[in-house]
Image (cartoon, rainbow, N blue to C red; front, side, top):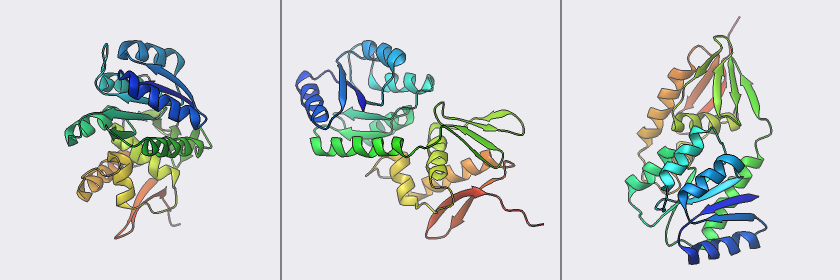
Length: 227
């Protein structure tokens, strides 16, 4: 997997690069955020690991730019600050995962493997459900009847993708919390209920439904109409 590492601590960058290369990955390293963003815009990546505090352009801005360009590769954000708001800011910008320094190299490697498996599980770049058409690469959702794009927030989009990947299966609230907010995040379960409620409103009239099983979780499936 081709990984772009953006970290201005040269010693840490060198250690991470060696560990990932030992795992068989190709790693491009940058210490300046602005240069890294230009590279990502033109060359992309299979996965990016980006520090928040960088010279030139900070990690939050880089991640926002990646998502604004509709680049779908995963982003792991690094920071020396473990503050919850810092984590929230990174995830809201479009990061898929989050690590606080100092971290164990084994943990970073495990998270890279997890995100790699998630990408590998995607068999189709375009999928349909009811009147929905989802373009995975561009991460855009359309109503095929109205021909209009359904405008989802970043978390609503992640929620939809997670449920779509497990279509016909119930997904627990705890799994959704880890996916939407990061493993170990202090998230109330009513925050998940709110995200599901918002997504349901977006899907109204599309023949796609989110079903609830109390104590089990949520399932995305096509609406069944009785004759």
